[in-house]
Length: 565
Image: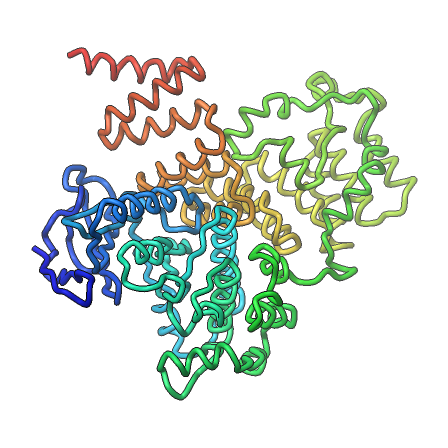
């Protein structure tokens, strides 16, 4: 039983003896961490023993009064609606003897603070630091678009999952503190990472942007931007308000100039001088375009007409595999039309079913077109690539791969040639080689989410589920509104025997595409495995309502029979 002590007008909770007790539906198994405002416990559902462990956070302050309780519940409901791959999911919230508590997914990989301590004041490798920062920044950008400000960014609030997932945590802390009346919330936070205006009680998304830049500075240099002689509030406030940070390249010359400039701008004392949004800051993190590496796919979109002149005719039919877009989307997580729209890779000239059977194109044999192209045009990288497309469409894969190889030899930065290779490797189930091709495209187009997803599909086929999950996390960090990718991520989590997280991913997919019966059916399958029969029956019923599929009818009827008996 927790004991209560008075601190001013607030009831503070001493929760040293809560291990073994039940909070809501969760029995506390041990202490994960303690802080100034609350303690975090490892929890297990008291009834569903097969559910994954969770983290239960109890605030130290007791909430009194109906209005404050209702406010806390409204804020908890708001936070539960934050659905993003890099925001620690809120599972439940409630009151225990007046003590507010939050239940989240348990991130067993430790915190960013743990990682920084392991570094012993040395910077993280640039690619690893940017990987963490891009996930964190994308989560903040999403939250800001939902009109939620974190207010307390610090390494302790960045957590890692068992497979390296990056989670932003403790969104609810500042909001919950407001309900406890422990102080003016605007001034709450961790001084070492607080924006100058936050010391005066002014909060906005730009305050989070400043704290994010302080974190980025520490990851990239191994030290905080300010190291005052005294750790007192006034001394730290003075440095954030009046002292300019040392350019980070003085501590780590490997930091690219454009990243240094972005960090220093985000740490401007006057918030009006910072970026307009987190999205603008993340955009500034991208390397500046150069004539040799600027957006190869974008440049090649303008050559589409020339491509089609080589291997296309006006009455070309869509290929056999594109005639079942819905099936392909469910198998790969990517709708062909969406993929082509985003990447600029079009295959309008592929032969129809009849053409594949006869080997004769409407205008002429595609192999003949490829050979003629080689004879009539200069043998540039693009012309070899066009040959590769024509040979591949005709099913002559060895010649196609040879042509793509010649294109790449002439121009190692030709992403469409690598994509042509990957298509063939995928069709031939040569997934390892497909992954290598996707990796080359990703190096050329690091901000195109579709190739991360395609790589994830190939990794999944090889049973490399952890890597597949990481690939989909990268895709969703760049584009979080793709329902198919959330569903594919859920299937990977299911394969990893992480059903609770899989259910959460299906929830995200359903939120984005509520009329897709397939998602409800898959969610029903997981709930059935977990013996949550009532919930599973509801999912199957919804799937049947949207799409009278025989397999779901069988599942639904089997549950109805159980209810009858």
